[in-house]
Image (cartoon, rainbow, N blue to C red):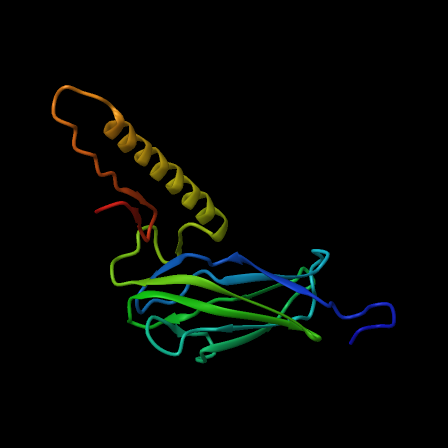
Length: 185
């Protein structure tokens, strides 16, 4: 309950701390968790907020340690809430964990992308690939690479030669796991 000098937050923010882009082998148990932080409009951690983690009902998914598809956790004094020990099913593919936080009338939500692989996971269970922060960096690098490839193709087409015109080159740029391919494969 809120005291006389402490009002419930009007706006809360939710951000992923750990778990974005994790890759697990099908049928395995998560050895790392999923963690989020809830903060108020001023960026201060929100204690005792209710956070719901929900796995997909079908397809690539699993269940929490309780055996349920939904786990509800209360944030600690630092505003963090986490779950771990999920048992993954045997359906390979991408999936999203839906996360919803609430405190008083304030609500926030996001999704955390993960992947179940039918191939051996390099680096062991719970290998984390690009986080949501570094994904932006990789997309920026991909855009720069694409721009450079387009510029090279434009330069080849724009150059004058007495010989037959050079065929434009096709450049494929591949980034990360899962792969992002820009251009023709």
